[in-house]
Length: 615
Image (cartoon, rainbow, N blue to C red):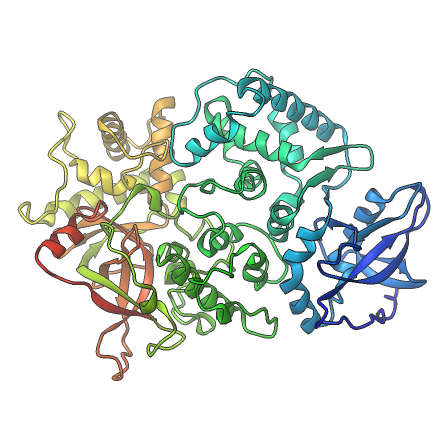
């Protein structure tokens, strides 16, 4: 079937900040949609409308709908959403992106994206279309409603809810209070697994709206806040959940929205950065959400930023322009994130090991946060939590040093200390070794041999404690585990003993099945080591580095970054720069450095950080 001709949109008046609204004429379920377009002015009280938030899904699945008597080609999912919210008795005025924006006009798209915050804030409600209902989903919603009643009962009608969840997100332990409601986790995933929750654009759509009502088919609706509170409550009660349910991304996609949409206040779900509305936080969130254009990983979050602050970074870095290459947009967003918080924590999403071994992928600098790339657990290492460490010892950055300056757009000049270089690295802890315990035993054996080569007096041991009868120094255990236990908290003496016994078993008898208690420590070890290498350094340092690191690479602490980095000296250093230039490889865990000891000692000796040029 041939697509209808392009719809003749009337131009919008940019000076008046105009936008289009769609009138859905009243109609019964079996009747075809009849729609009309009109123009409205932002902030005009006379414009009373609702927004529609839905999932585009497969944009190749198209449908035609009548607008002002002419057929318009739109995503089939948009037609389904419009039919779902249509009223049988009266017309409904809505804003929906696929029809109200001329999608073939890049200039108009950019202009409307810049107005998005105003469009959603001015709407009286955001109508969220989750798709059609079915029996498993109905059962899932019934469990959600029962869980919500339990939450209200246990938190004095929600008066204690926010405080409990905020403390959990800030690092407090999970609740051991057992969930009373009988959980059908498969049914719950029929709700939380709806594709809408995975979309990038829904973050700002839901966060900016005064209220959000979710529809699943025409016969069921529920407040979005109820779904978010139930999801984050389940995360808080992790001991009540099966590992299968806890490890499912769908649960965390929903829970992750709570701080932005419902509470709008605390740290985000992994607690790794302090301001949920900062560019750093929003970029890291966007990495795990879906959009059809990778540039929207930046453009899709801009409306959530506070760009009116007099101390805000260079706003020219955030101009919406779909004609620009993706790597330039990612570069400028990364620089903005660094300037906004005077922090390098965004660099956790950067590094050459985030790409396919390419140091010049599409001309993209190595320090750019590649949130346009989906996390690939066959190649990418999990990030090291900024919350757990402070290698910078409180040494921060100065805003003026971070502006686009003589270093050039593609160079990030930051103060820091190069503390050592890598002498030897182990083989990569490939994801496949965790299903091949004999191969894992070989790599762990090579780690032991690397340690034996070191002069014991030079090793930067940080712990005098060793489990009784152990031949594995605690600092080696700390390195292999990133000093994080199975609950992702810092290890204690009990954890060191458990990891020591596990490592000895893995090295000496890899074919023996693991006990239940060992399994959780094995999972933690896998999470820490996967796609990394163990290393030894010239100053007696040991630790873990990205999979692309090799002998001769540098180890550095960058001011304001909680976690150190592995760097590689550029072979093509430009004579214009007095300092050596480096590629950023990725995060590193370095014994004796993670808690700020190195920087504190350097400052006591009067050693100021040097300027490092990242390219």
